[in-house]
Amino acid sequence: MGRRALLLTAISAGLHFLWENAQCSLFFVHGSFATGLRGMVIATTGDVAITWSIFLLIAVVSGGLGWASKRWRGWQWGAILLLALAVAIGIERRALTTGRWSYTAIAPTLPGLEVGLVPLAPFS
Image 1 (cartoon, helix red, strand yellow):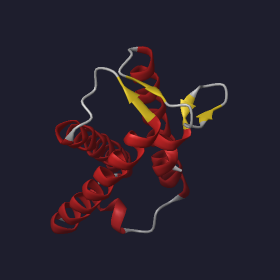
Image 2 (image 1 turned 135 degrees about the vertical axis):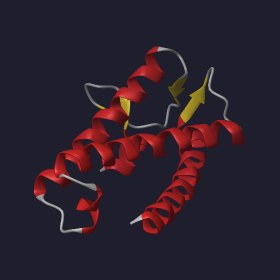
Image 3 (image 1 turned 90 degrees about the vertical axis):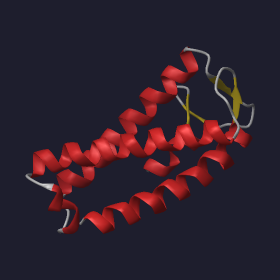
């Protein structure tokens, strides 16, 4: 489990880093958030840590880290999706209300929440 977890973490961090760079330059106007390499690495690291936190929470409820290598039950799929969406929406709302960033004119938003659809795309 250890090597596989490290490999998957490295792959997901790399892909997420590319995603951060692609979406940020197109859809966000940054205020207090650094948009350079350091800022993107921090954003990626934070998102990977959040993902691992969700994974570990489900592992505790499921009775161990081995749950990911077994056939996933419906509630596990649902828990990952709902927790990831809740965290993503919470982070977006906080960043928007504290002025860390705003959306460009071309950024599509989720009606009612006014949260960008693009940052939520990886979770759907």
